[in-house]
Length: 294
Image (cartoon, rainbow, N blue to C red; front, side, top):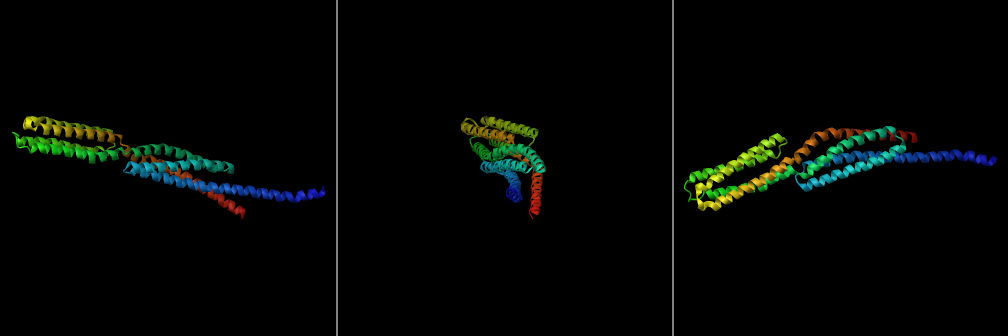
């Protein structure tokens, strides 16, 4: 019995020391992983905000969609790392760091709510589409209208050539003014201002159609087909204009940019601050453990 007691007395401190070393090593590994995860959080948040900004500024659907996908992937990384980090901090019993992580989660939830709306708007690209439609199909329809009017004005069998030319010029000027108004409507963010622009478009359309309606009496029956062609071209101008206005009214590019410059600029810094504080606090834990280990 005495010999056994001696062995136990000798072995117990060694066992306790080894057990303590094992626990210390485990804690150090968990702390090391927690520090790594906090760094991942900071990097992922920076990448997510950058990708979202690129999505807002992109000028094609494909580019916007690619950056939206990248932003969402980085935000999912944030969620994954946050969950794993919380588990580690609970095992390490780091109450202050858990509280800081909770603050980050709250700030990130607020940020993500706005960011989802920004990304949804950005990928629609309605202002960009409206602008492209105005430059391409809209310009093409207006030029076709011009060509149809020139065919009427150049006829030599009209009774009052000067009146015909003046009437055609009035109609064309009205359509060109509609194009100018499109350029003002597309980037406009104010509903009241857009309504005023649309009212002016309607007034210019009436001017152009009144001029077209006056042409048959001036050019005679022989010019009927050319007047019909001009009227059809005018219909195309207004059909494209209606599409432009509808896209412009959605204002998704303008709205996503406004949210990015205002709401997100307010919500991003608290996220960055809390994750930086968490990373720095975990780094201090590592320094203390290093001194103890020495």
